[in-house]
Length: 269
Length: 266
Image 1 (cartoon, rainbow over the protein chains, first blue to last red):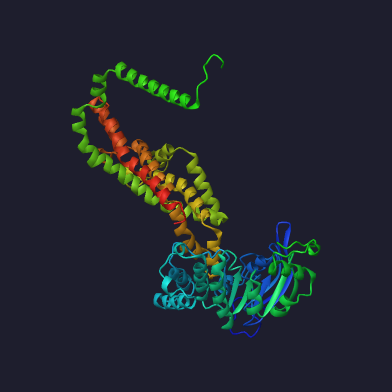
Image 2 (cartoon, rainbow over the protein chains, first blue to last red):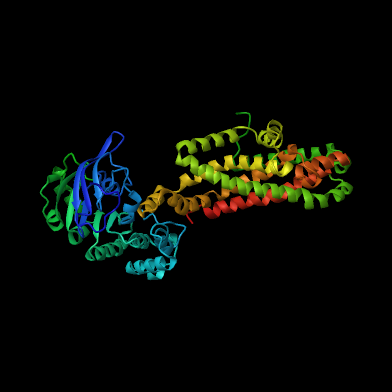
């Protein structure tokens, strides 16, 4: 039943997660997550820190090994030890909070290395694709810069271009703007919005509620290792039904106005 | 306490400073006057002996020391990277690497050299190629490999885990990640400690005197020792010491520069 290789032609949803549990020692971080993402869908995951949203994202491409449950990515069952995880990851781009650019390579070098080593593209082809993607994220004039010479926002856009250079079917974003100075957030979100408009399948863990509301199709609110509430983004953010979601959104959207009576036992961070 | 008059902190400091200078001057004067300088000069800084020794020091002894050091260092570094990667990978080969590292770090380098030069030929009737120097370089390669493996391992572990995660998320295999992403950064991190290792190795080549050298194979210490016996004078030893310092001091200075240059993240 399970494919050992990614199936790029399949019409099945690219991401199907069911009954996902993840524990670190005795600390259970994910307590049974079910999530299906259809092709071209943009899903935002919001929630207080420690709610397990980053762990969920890292489980999707097996940077963390789930304790139990199933993750079907592009038709391949990632928890099956026989599955070619490296091959599946080739089609799943990931963008990290701390960029994780390779500091010893230029912007274009960062975008070329995996194309050459993994996809075995020719140098000319890899460079051409890298250039195209760096232009796409607005960094045509920074191609030969090392990461240390780039601002945080530019580094994160190089990281997006690096992921896009692999022609991914799915993009995972792990709080991509959380480490940025506020005035640099907009550039990165604009690139992500364009990507969403272009039809990319995306899972975005974020604290940017306006991005979630305006760009994503669906928003998921997680707390304490479970999905508390999910729904169409505009509806969920404008009118959440669960009390925990209401408290969280109120604190995030209006941090200076805190009504003590609303602070229950689940303290959003 | 009450016997001493109260002094202001500035005065106390100045007084302490003056006293230490007086003490240092006294020691120097004592050395100058208590020493038989004529004898010292004749025994340690003899111009006739120096004139006879220095061409050989430069053309043979120092040259051989550098050859033994550089070849052991290059081979030893390659071995170190291999051992470090194997150790971190774990498994049976990792255990083998760990055992290798612990054994050769745990026994004296002299013993390893002695084993390569004499114990193996004695036990197996098999001589390592290259006579004394061959066995010596092999032994120092092993010793350097074992010590430097721990340096390289620390360097690999100093590379942020986010780097590996980024590489793996792009579909790179664990060996591609190690070779293309982690090792280049780790090797940059270990440049200063590896330069220190080079200096240590340079000094350890003096242990090679046990391996037995022909006249043209002698390194600095062997040369100094033999020249001392022949001339019945310590001047060659002083010259050899200076030859070591000419190489080690600039390198030690270079380590300081490199540490400053490489320390802040680029």
